Length: 199
Length: 199
Length: 199
Image (cartoon, rainbow over all chains, first blue to last red; front, side, top):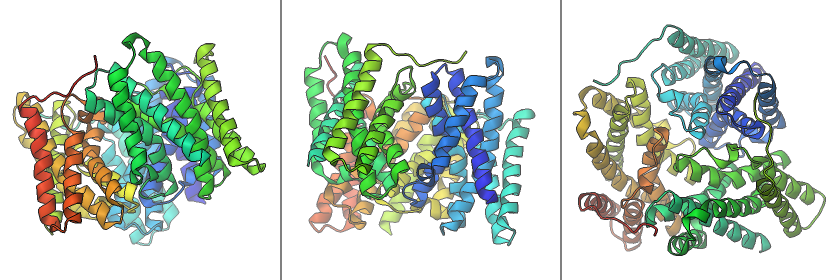
């Protein structure tokens, strides 16, 4: 139950990040809803395709569809001033990324995917929706840019897998991993941590 | 049988739209064939991956492969003047979109996907090939641009699902939904219907 | 066993091509690793998704993950002068493409995919990773550009399928097909073979 709530919060955060990116790109209301829903559900659909869950959970349950549509419409109507949008997209994206890293890993474990695959699929769930959003807008995805991103997602998924193996209750493990992943990402943004670049 | 014919017409329309887009982008004959085939088969492959149909139907049946290759070669040889290409791509795309929205939804229903998933998968089938075409050419996909597109695809899929639930024969339901989706899209293009944009 | 070795060589070549492309695009070390791993594993993941192998082999076996990470880090540290990078990316890409075309086709055959699907899935395995790499970097994929690419991949896969049907041992068939595909591609690059372009 806690996991489902975390999943819906992650969907809300990613839908808002996708819809705000659509506002920034001057899409119309339909384009904004499509982009918001794709960003919100893309990671989970990718996860289910990799795990062989057919059709993907988020396309079967109408609540998973209505949530990003409503969030995107709210963003369209009440979005803040354009100058502040870039930062808001990044913060909401960090929140969704952290939540999806543990939720994706937990789903993989519950489908007997093995610990290595659970870590990788958790990371993929966390970075997939944002990567789709950026590719659709013709931008180089955030996950490749000069900030800590995929590493944070992998850390969150790994914490969940390790804690699960150690017998920690899954709700607590998810909370720990999500806080770590989102926190790492926000810290990297805030402190302008830079990874080395090629000579 | 009617459904298979509609499917092949949809493949033909999307192959022509992809090949014409390739001509516009000055690809060579091989690039044009690859782009035409990807546009034509992409939506169906996506549909089958979401439904767990492995390997996807269109990769197993050689007729599904030969059709877009032949269409792309014909487009390469006999394409109209470049100045008229943009409009032709859009009209063929609208035709393929309408046909795939109902065909995708019908396939989903016949694989017990549930009514919500059938609507969404029908829409995805209809918009997937065109989105792939645009992403490969580094353009913001038509489905996000300032015209009615995803909504028309969703309407077509929903009509098929509703008519099927009401006991309408599936061939008739597919025809109704396809005409609605394609007609809505063409009307929106012709009358320059614009959805609201952000403040 | 020979097939697994060929697969790992293909992963190494594609990881290096992806990491070098990341160096060229001035990504940082994390972005380079993500891009190298995506290029190396993308084709195989696509193949497994199309065949219904869940979760994909390369996400389960840690050796398939460690290889591209190590290769990408080595490229990051020891990459040659930037002026020579474009050619190196293309040569390594040709090597990976040839190896994956036969490995993908052989995997498809061993999952009862039928000869047509085996040819197409072999080609898709060979071109998928490079296409992902280029799309993520906002470039029109190599497979659409003015050089022989998809045709070479299809030739390699077809040779494997035909040789397998004729009773040739699979290791030999894979070698023949890979040499043909990579050789065809390198020849086309070296001799500047150009396919016809639209009028």
